[in-house]
Image (cartoon, rainbow, N blue to C red; front, side, top):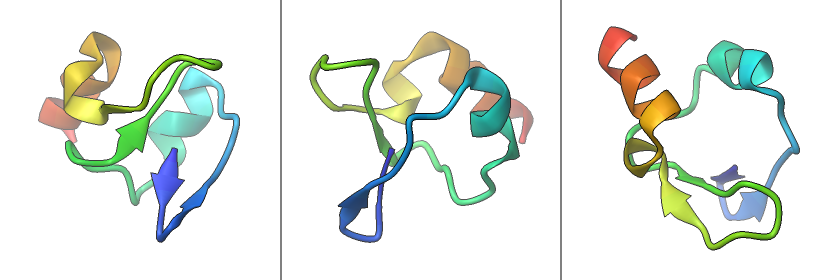
Length: 51
């Protein structure tokens, strides 16, 4: 994740669920892939709608 101007992680899915700072606009990436907004990753988008 990219929060407060710095990259943080890596996190497992369980750890991501526990991070309260994540929003639909939080930049996230898997491995070395491009940064995407959390809302663009299906697993995270589903979590964000339940939060």
